[in-house]
Amino acid sequence: MRELLAEGLVVEWPVSGERIVGPAHYVRMADREYWTELGSDPSPEWRAGLVQPL
Image 1: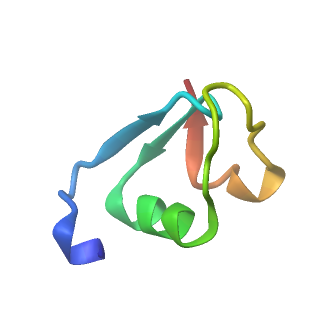
Image 2: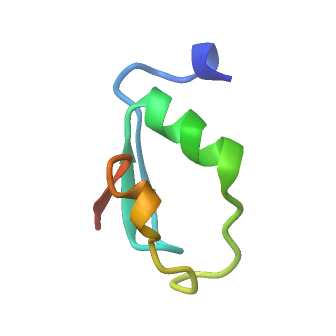
């Protein structure tokens, strides 16, 4: 999946109130997470190095 994403990828994820910057971080998140509803999932500690708050 990594090779399909743009180098400057920025994904704003309103479900958890996070911004995912960079394709490597997005792939690590996508391999582990599945979000459900807007604003319903708090950001766990393990994601701190992969995301920024919105």
